[in-house]
Image (cartoon, rainbow, N blue to C red; front, side, top):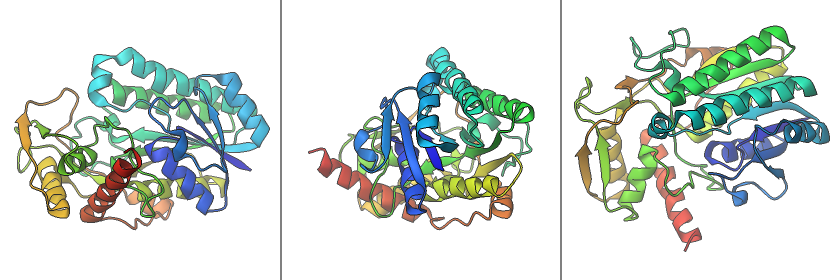
Length: 328
């Protein structure tokens, strides 16, 4: 059987494609290339350019390739953009996901793995936050993902579709083999921005907010290496295929770093003391969010391999150097 990866030409999706291929899976990719890159998908993988909201296209792909599982990454992910244009996020992240889920049900797909986010928790009352914490998103991005979680939950009750929801914390780094990485030029991920600044691709970088109730006043996040994240998806697929019940899992290491911690790590790894400016808070940013990931470790037997901020930054730096060489 074949795994359909939506958003498979994007950052996390392209890593997932390689993870599946390395495991001997047959893979097909659907991506509209809004933020993804055709070159990020290996030539031997069948590729379709289009939207997840195109049910006829999705159903035809499922039928043509004998898809039994969908791993759904395709989404808009920038929190401030979601605040400025919420309707676009509800269309792309919620409405299109609902259409894809309906197509999966109609086509007899057995397993669905959904790329969700820690943004569904908002500003949690306790840290680390567990999957049982009440959702309270602070942005349309978080709300759009939570709505899709609810759609999946209700669909799983009504139809024979088993699902896993994976709530990501802050994803960073690149494939250790340097086959793919974060390639979007204007990406807003902190580590990518810091690495680009260290390499002179940006004149300076901003720190948004220094008055949060955290040890140094900047936001604290749980940074997870992208390769560990996609392995959690493989573990979830294996779990569902073995008869596991539908479930929700946090994907993080359980340890937080502040924005200033990350910047200092990038400076140390790169050897460059780049320019940093302090700015006002951005809307939609919680002060501190760190994962309780016991459920993934216990149920999925997920065992991270790259739980080290220096390693994450080092991989991100090497990828950015290679990407710059590729684009020049």
